[in-house]
Length: 435
Ligand SMILES: [Zn+2]
Image 1 (cartoon, rainbow, N blue to C red):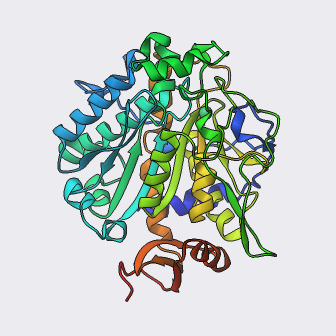
Image 2 (image 1 turned 90 degrees about the horizontal axis):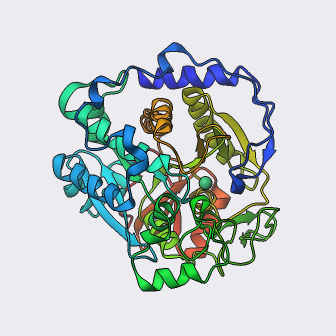
């Protein structure tokens, strides 16, 4: 049923020629586009969700009041309430010693997370939010999705077209709701939200004092410019570093509320937490929620056709569900979590910009339900697409253990030689260990 819906969705959009315009992902800009208006089929429209929003742990109507601490408490409470399908994992700490965590959603979650072959025992999908401080609506959206899916799983099967019991028995949804807790709290609550003296000192040393519009972390590093970035030079066969090689127009050379990439790629604790997490799993897709623009960026400038086709398919599904426009990357920007994920995996990775461009940030209460109604099913569509695609033929092993697969042989070989791994060709579910 689901795969038919997906095929239909893709064909429906493919029938219209996708007019792609150039823009720059780093600025959360309005973007120039001649993208055709796509009619969303009635079955993908927002559905009545009022009934199951009663007595929730997270209330969308008071979203603007939640701090990072509130979110981590709600996340822990979700894991306590639904331990069979939700595992709470601390993946790092911010400069201000605030917790960065993932919520792993799958059947027998804690047991599965502890298994050595978890990476191939089930298929994995990643969704993050809150990389930029002032984009405060999305952390709530992710936590609400988790609560909603859990409610469906245990109570009522209210979600149409998707069977959560079936999905969570074979797939794993990884949610990292708030990558940048310090920036989030600073934007919403001001400098009194800073807890540790060392973080306070970092913040006071920065000239920019426009705290409500803060995108960076507390050290003034724009985390979505801080991830490493590289691409394969086909002529030399070398993976070439492209981090800040083409900084573009949105750039700060000093710590600031936005656009400062850091002194080196991966310098920040928040960036490192996400990088380590990325390295641990073979994600079939990677999606980062930002605001604003009602846009979907799917970066493919530097990557081969085999990547571009998969990324476009994921982007088109997102567009058809949400009505957001598609924008491709100019290739000049770098350091995004999504482009780093493409660099290491060649797997479809999207930046989804929720909220119309003229919405004030940080987000007011009235925006939360509005975004939720557009996006609440997206992770389930991503899972359905991943399942339909299956595994790619070129599998990377390191010390005999499966790491991830690639759709492109040359790219896979370059990655393998960079880490001392080996590529094996295969079909179906990869072996976890190759002797
Ligand atoms: Zn952003």
